[in-house]
Image 1 (cartoon, chains in turn orange, yellow):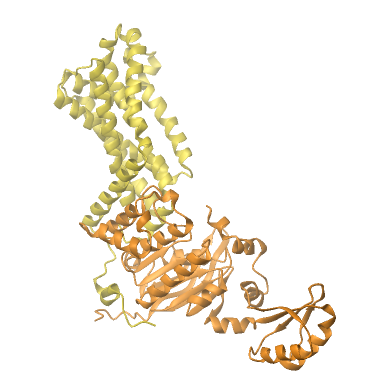
Image 2 (cartoon, chains in turn yellow, purple; image 1 turned 135 degrees about the horizontal axis):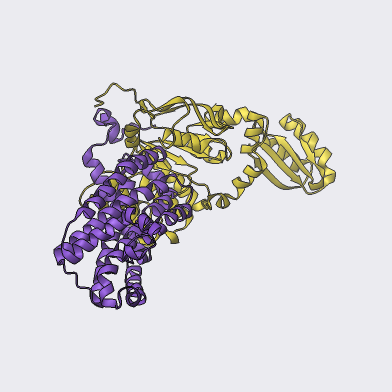
Length: 335
Length: 272
């Protein structure tokens, strides 16, 4: 079927990508290899160079050094071909605020060469698919963040591009809309598309991505499956809160005996934290606690966080201001 | 992992890295259609080509008519072509302001990522603006007609005069488009354009006979391209004549386009 000899097993191939803004090396030698038909996550805090990297891969910015190929086509010299193979959904919805949802999709369909009644049909079809039919004629100014994001994604899918870039697709979305977005992304991949998405959340990468690259200060600091990544960071931690602080020494002994590790104490809250290497042995610990009459008020498991990933990989945490943006994403999307 | 291959990947050899003339025209028309939709959504942006021509025509006629020509009726053949040129030339400035606003919007990022002719958002905007000029021209002549201006040149000459003004405004809009591309904000485009346009339109023979001006001003007025355009419109509308002035106006417009179109396109392509 393939009429050219171009290798299409790699959807994205980037070597030593560099982008300078003045003296700031926003992207400082990024290498990426993304297999066709997979979801690839690019993980990092704000300002790590995620958006700049996507912009270069999507031909929006010219790299200052290095090279990148999309399905074997050079982003610099074959940009017009690359644009026929990609869909881009930016961090900020790139749709026309003055037009309605239908008009937006019709506009992009026409620009992509659909003729006659095809643009209208395509628009209606996509609006239906993304649950926007009822809002089709409303001005975009009244759209919620989630609706805007869905419309934006719909606009990226008009040409059914084999490669889709999603720049922080769920930042600022509520949990329900977020899981809808995740389902949409999973469906796209099931239909054969390749997806590159950026995120600040390890959990999101975990849910969606086959492989992940962690970016910090314009460089890839780690690459692998999410499982590999988490292992490199450390294990989940078990947190126990006891009813009485006086039980703490006894509980620590039990933890040592059953889990074989030392626990950390935060006395003011009667809290014990222990690394959890083998989840199965937690049962033994709980049984032992009951046997010795140590009352537990709260049990929780703490997954490694992006902060910890960063601490481990880079020796510094995701910076304070940037960590704030992580918890209040709506501030960040308000442009 | 999936075994389905998206349609485009099965035949990458059919993809082309170039944009043909047909696609440029096609994309430009679509962008112009977008411009029309925007006007439909925000009709208030047409104030400068609807209310303003009517208001200014009436104001100037009744305020200056008696003082300059003795009465309003005698002033109209002098003033209507002047106000026509002034209004339409001034409205051409909107091209630059809107282009800047547009380029700052998120939708421009999408345009950049689409396999379309890069020039089409700019070309489409310039095309939509000709509609604005047509509205302003029609309304100015119509208001003139209502207050008693019946051009002796006849309808054909009036239409020709309208087209001449439209062409000159379109030529000038390339200058503002250039400012729009290189400026940092829409308001700076507006400010810059005003500084150029105000003296150019008022220090001319648009509202007064040139021989009423002090000699130094008359010299400027005589070389001012706006004066040539105004005289050309007067010749056409009032006498049905196409004189040297019309030739100068067209030539001037072509020179502006020859200089600013490449400049604008180059600056634009670098940013787009």
